[in-house]
Length: 305
Image (cartoon, rainbow, N blue to C red):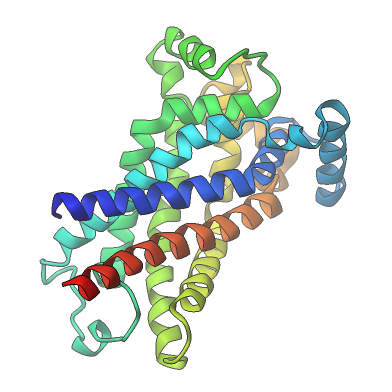
């Protein structure tokens, strides 16, 4: 990609990450608070969400629901920007290979309003998983800080102080939860990109006159829901590993065993509705903004050319 294109992708990704982080922080905060605890067998999800929300508002007011927003922005703005940019760049490279390119010429002329490279289904899955895990490795320290800011277990005075505190604890703390994050993010991103592109193509075929924003919204929401449900257990494991200070939550296997012993299968789906809601909304916001901004830039360049 040329420097101008990279800048456009970074800007579009950063803007979508900013919008999603600010608007949806309460859902992320509640999810973390619910997942960090040991839970009570048989407790209803809606009751737990309501009680947790009331407790936060009672202690800190409405603004308490946005606790950790700065940490989320620090993680999500560069994270989404880097992910979207690296994903697009990787897809551009893979599209040149006959193994990953769309073989059926009719599929490559589907009429979808997009400026993004098009790949086969397995190409989309590989590119999504690779880009997501690579960015996750780079930004894992910020994910740890974000989770701890939201948890309420740590009395950090400032964002910088919290990051310094984690850094001082060494590489193992900086990378804490990365394995669980990767097991969540690789299949999530792979499934998401494949489903998103597939639904976008089929939706355009069924409704060729629909607005591109509508097609992107429906495709992103559907892909977000499917990918979230398939990977949620790893999100629960990741949160406990990054937030809980006890020794029993330091390892991936020991954390998994602890959740199973305490709650059984249901324990791996704590906060599902909150993460599902957030992922659907953030997917819609993220991809509509990302593709929309790139289309505006592209159309503007063509109009002035």
